[in-house]
Amino acid sequence: MAGPERASRWLVSRHAGALDWLQSRGINADRIVTHLDPEAPAPGDTVIGTLPIHVAARLCERGVEVRFLAMELPRHLRGRELTRDEMESSNARLEAFRIERIGSVEDACT
Image (cartoon, rainbow, N blue to C red; front, side, top):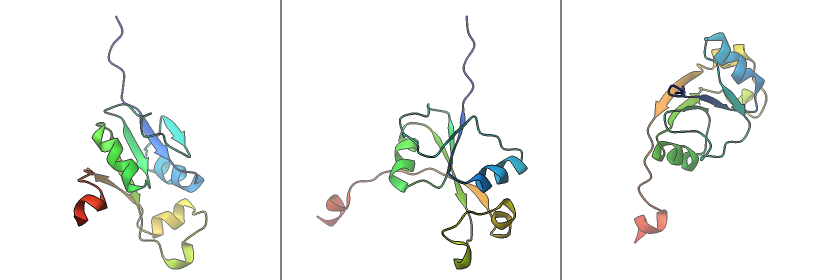
């Protein structure tokens, strides 16, 4: 009889600097993807990245932990590849979120 499967840690990023930054902190990803199907991670898995809020909400609905890769990015660093050191100087950190969908804009405006 097989034992319980270990939860997976997913990194959603197309940036090598993000992977380097995580690894420098001893955080390893089991799966690294540039695009995430929100149905792919299993409940109990953790997804790390900068995700659209509706994707993060779907993950939370399914019991997936969401860790947002947050930074205080100065204007001159926006829109380009960042190194681990640039991420560090921009106060890169992982923040946990639990996001709940409460309805659509049409529902809120009526």
